Length: 211
Image (cartoon, rainbow, N blue to C red):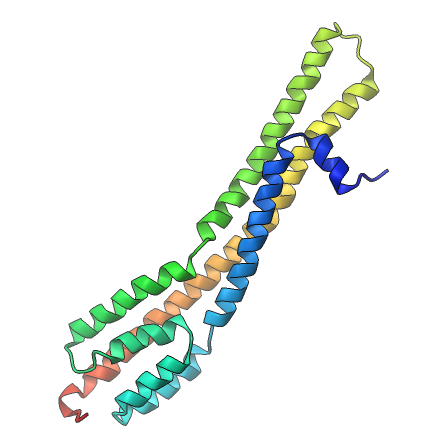
C-alpha cells in the first residue's frame, strides 16, 4: 500500500527535513536561474552583425545606444569597450575585462549553492539510513535476538527511506547544475569571442576615425 508524502516524512525521521530543505532551496535556485539565463541569452551572432555594421560606419553613439537597448551581459561588456574607442588597444581590452569580471559572477550566482544541495542531500540520506540501522541492531541486542522478522524488516525499510529521498533530491539537482554550468560556459565563450572581435574593430582603423 503506497504511503502518502507526509507519512514518508515521519517514517524517514528527523533527517528528512534537511533533505526537504535542500529540495526547496534547489527548486528555487533552478527557477531563478532559468528566468535569469533566459533573459541574459541573446542571438550573439545577430547582435555582433549589427554592432559590426555600425562600427564600420564609425557610428559610435549608435553602437552604444544598441548596447543600451539590449539587456544582456555581452551587450554590457561590449558597451564598456566601445566607450573607450579613442583609447589604446590595451585600455579597451582592460575595460572589457573589468566589465566581464562584473558579469561573470552574475551568471554563476547561486550555482555553488545548487551544487552544495545536490552533494549533501544523498549524504544526509545515508546518515539517516545509518542511524536507522543502528536503532535496528540496538533493538536486536536489547531483545537478545528474539525479534519478530516483520518488525525488523519494517525498521530497515524506514531507515532506507532517507537514502531514497536523498537520491531523489540529489539526482535532478545535479542534472540542472550541470546544465546551468554548461550554459554559462557557452555564454562566457561567446562573450570572449565577441570582445576580441570588438577590440579588432575599434583599433583596426583607429587613426582614421573622426568622431
